[in-house]
Length: 168
Image 1 (cartoon, helix red, strand yellow):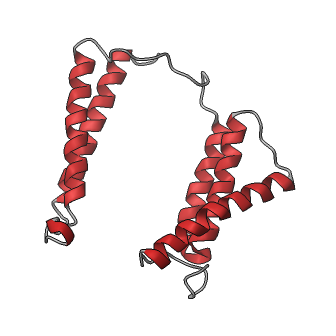
Image 2 (tube, helix red, strand yellow):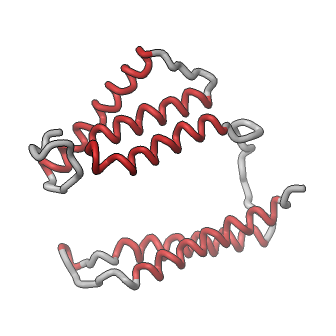
């Protein structure tokens, strides 16, 4: 037997409020030394923590005073699409596991290819043919490479690369 809509909505509010509080508490451990433009590295976590706390409190109030109003009907399937979820999850986990080994560009390309498999599987259009893999890898590379180059070459932000040249 499932939870009532009111209980589910209350849990969403409590979870959002809890996340906001946790982020704010985590911001206590970050240095507040002012940097560029007079704000320290803990500024953004405080803003996010405060915003999530306020939103969580509002969601909690909303759920307890009649439920979320003006909600549209849920879209999507009746049940989770587990194979699609697995494709996307493997892509994200592979990216995290391989980024320091094969570099940003290749790990992000792999993540893109696997995530596309998941999204296409969810649409019922999964294509495991070599051409589909190659096209998705080319698109993923075309997205990841300029992002890497912009961060490393233009913004001088270090991202893990495959070589020491800063170009791959």
